Length: 154
Image (cartoon, rainbow, N blue to C red; front, side, top):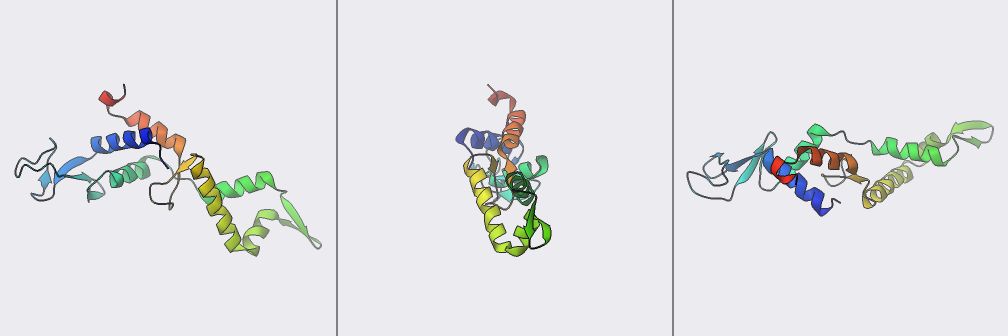
């Protein structure tokens, strides 16, 4: 979950990098009010389309500018650091991670999801699409600081 300051910074960037749009008159309203009908109930237009709110713009900007992490690889790396590389089964020396993945894929998937939940609760990773894709929180923070509108940096 994003902290309040980071969320506010991402919203400022989303407003900066999108265009206000009047859906009723179907034209841009960059001043924040439609020149034709006078409404200030405007959508945000970005490359990805039109929506109310900033969530779609933030997701689009994050996807364009940051690399998502591969949870499976991250978890596997962590497991390899914690447990022996091989396990002996009868007369065979087998890779521990491969044995775990292939012996009980459901348990492996649950463990990966629990790892993601833990990392997210500790603030190490963040998702903007309800857990489908994760990004390192530190990289999101860095992106936000680098892209804040000039007047907002103080």
